Length: 306
Image (cartoon, rainbow, N blue to C red; front, side, top):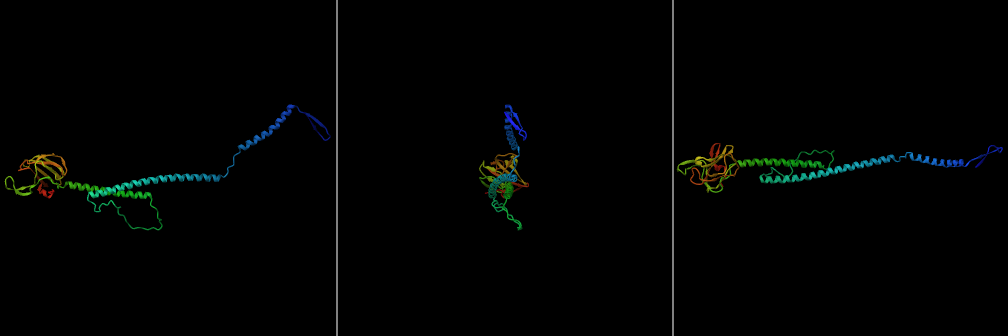
């Protein structure tokens, strides 16, 4: 390929001859340059940092989401606590109802329903009311209700404990009294004091009560105590002696059989022997004696004769 170049204004010309390879290289260079420009431009645009838009708004939205999550968690925790307190309140109310029912039943059984123990009403409270206008009225707190209910239960529990102590003491005192009838059959054939002796006919002191009854009739302890003698004792025949404390003791004479032995603990109304006619006796009967501080006293002052 020939190219003519004009060198000056006088019209001088120069001829430049280009071969085929040179032409191809020049064409390739012309094509490669635009491609490289495009590639470099794309690379720069891709690596450039993206602009951050609405940064403050995004932060505010994130903070709002965090606050909502915290409120939801707090609400769930409060709901769980409320449910727990409600269940606890129900259990305490049930327990209080049972304590009230038990207390009323015990006061009836103990015959103490004179107002000293009252399980149907709340305990009395009072005191002057100090008004403070600066304090606003507030709805009752659930925990406060629970605390008051727990106080009521404690009050009921203390009343029940006191009632139990009184009943136990009354039971002990009642068991210690010598007021149980020693035989349920028969009758009093000879009283306490001076009488005509059935063997000799002479006036003599009779230190007990005689209960005439069929042979084998059960004999019961007139009070609780411990057996201090059980066996044969001269004119008494088969005899039991029971110590009841506080200086009291009883004797059961002329028995056919002895159902307990020395050292045994007996309760009031427990069968201890059977009626017989052993020793100095004219027939089957029980000779009962009561001693106070070593002196024989009239058993009719203590035991139930009807």
